[in-house]
Length: 364
Image (cartoon, rainbow, N blue to C red; front, side):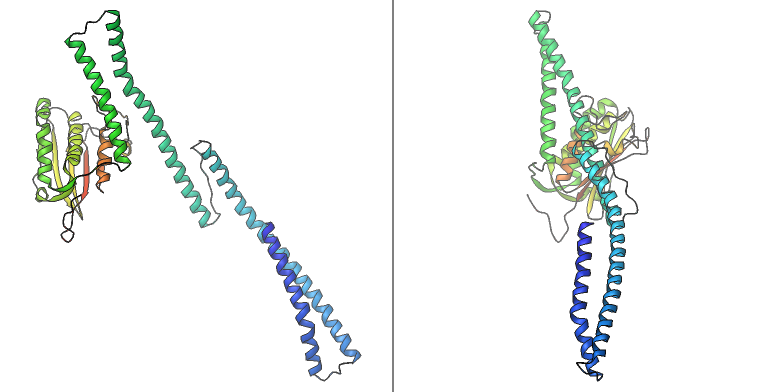
């Protein structure tokens, strides 16, 4: 408001000075050209009348224009001040850790509405990140509590002489130690993947070879659970993708193990491949528990818990799908989950860019 007022006053003063400096000489020259003598008393009176009339009309015009412009500036300043005050307050709340802060701005102009919308999206994402962080710490503590409690109990029992260090005790201690080691390794691996620190040995691999390796690794667990594992025939099985064979094999193994845990006996898990534009899509489809719609956006989050959370390994660290997503992202692909709801099974799709004929297959 102060800045606009200074500009308006400067403009008014400039107009007055220019009019006073330019107007009277021009009018005097025109009077001389009409035949009036330079020393005529009438000439002095006419010029005085012109000067007074000009100053009066110019003064009133400038005053009215300044008042009108000032009123418009005041209104615009108020319109801008309200949404900017809201944004400032919300930003301060966000900086204090209150991630629920939002702004409601309407009718303040397209730019401010866009800014408010972008701010709300940013705040929502920060709130989601904070919720995930809190849940991560809580679930990590839960994952650590069980093996640590078991180790502590056996340690106390051994110290007090209640428990003997026999084969059974050794087996329990080894199992819990392995569980802690696996949890640490999984967290380290997903951190490396999300930070882009995974070492990739990419080479051309046929989709059929990837499926064969994954099915062979899990054939016995599937047979033990009475679940069939079937590869659907298609032309895309012969397609070649440029991937790290062991890493994508890990992804498929995670997805197949996940499907096995949630598929009842005599059920079937299907492996299939198809092309979608420039990508080859690998799918794992089961006839198991399915996923509720509210859980679908969260199945790839670390330690996410749900009534039938697909990423929840009852014997593992619970971040298998998180690791899978990070590995697929590192390949420049994407992984998605779909389900029609509980009791209708689930489908996980891994999309991998296929090398074009003009580019060929590159080795990394």
